[in-house]
Image (cartoon, rainbow, N blue to C red):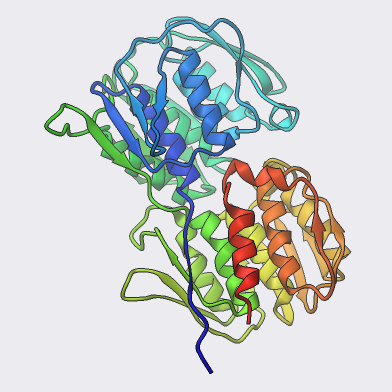
Length: 430
């Protein structure tokens, strides 16, 4: 028998890295090119917000984005962040630095998401702001006062984006600052990712464990992002592949037996979601890198994974739910109450969809207990959430009947090629 041809796919670029790279490249002291960014809807929201502030990124024919040094200008009206919580939160910190007032808003989902701790921290720093119950639309009166020994404390248990926003802003503020992030610290890998991108852009931020179990960041101020210039005076930043998106196609290949080789992912990435390889191993799925540095599914013997803490990797919760649904036995995925404040309440959305597919589950405040088995076909609501949609689209490959998920266009937020890649996997299934 002739062996089946291996399906070779490239992971999408990282959404998290792209957001941070755009914010810093736009304010670079030198011309800067961001290579292989994700140009999905969320990252385009960041590009649009930056452009309205005078920091225009030019998208090249090859998909790279060029920025030229420019001064900020007051926008003509409110800045619309669409559905992108990352855009809103990272840019609120940058708004504190601007010498004018800005108002930030977004779609219905974004306007329902909380930002209170970040706004309280800005107030403590002397930045006036106005919002109803911490939700957009949010007005920020720019002009962060110059201070020596500036200190601010932030709760660390809701969203790492609040701390990332403050760190990127304080590095550019006048004078040194100290940020104390109280425990427990949610999504720590995303903070590490912020520090890694900031360091690449020449920003000095030191972190260490605090006596209370949290984190303390010492931030040197008066810094401007920059990259080492090439012979033409231009800096370069390359976005690595997205481990969060890769999780969906890796699980799809495991459930179908498709011979997949997935490229574009760095084993030394600062993205916490690279943990998907280890976590799939807990379910009896052996994922390994080939000599060509491509990830391959070597062996599948599905089993329940027991208890998994997703507190550090909340974006892996939806794809892991799909895998747990097919693994006979009980799996507990918990540790992230913040999942209830994403594009939708992801815990409730995954629970409703799993039950529709005849998979038993119990909601927890911070996750789900899932009784794996044989999913059935059903009509599932994505709640317009890209990760919920992708999780159930993957689960559909293992269902006994047709499984439909609404709003397929929402995947453009983080993985525009998702449906093409999933169709290719389905075509190569065992």
